[in-house]
Image (cartoon, rainbow, N blue to C red; front, side, top):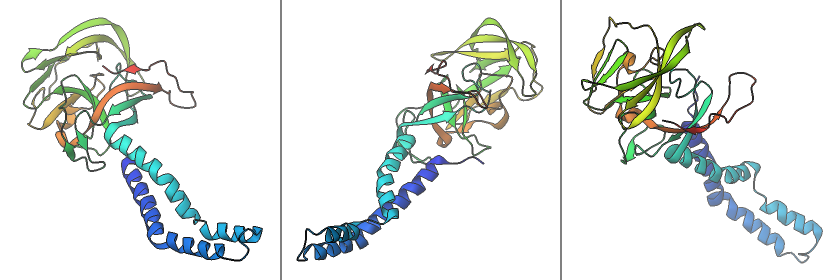
Length: 278
């Protein structure tokens, strides 16, 4: 089961904040008055009296923890919700750009400030550009996905015989080298590594080197307020070709950097893949 950390943070911030507020309104004054009565005793400097005063002023453990964690949790919530949020890549759909086990950073404000959990945009800033790598919630699932923006609202996308066209124009690509492409069943096929130029972004893609003509849909018109997403691992990516365009309100943010990589299993993390995402 996937955990919605934003929702968990909101709940924890709310609980700790309410506990701290209720204590301040209902119990803090009572503790202060009890301590002041003890200070008015005739032997204010006796060790027993000082211990009694300290005990009277002592906050309950729950309140102490709530006051300690509230500012920390609030800062983390603000950072994750409005600035930068970390993610881990769970699948190979974005190979060779992103590998399984990459830990990435996602800019949460570049496409506009949104309320956590519900995703409502409250401050518009920029719109996604063709070629950018974006984290979003697809129309068929509640989990976060990451793909590349291929089509903008109103675009016509065609993917025919493993060649990509945007608004009738073939997207420029150059074969770099032969490569082995891992398949979901554990086998591999010979493929090619491509250098593709999409909009202002130059990036890598890979395809299995067996030209085929799809018998299904290969032309899509992107509805207004939607974006057409595809993985860079073109033959091993379930994307908008399968489940349709992504609504604007499902956008999470722009992936901009790899900060760590960890192979599955008992392996130490590595920082050899650190860098910006193109």
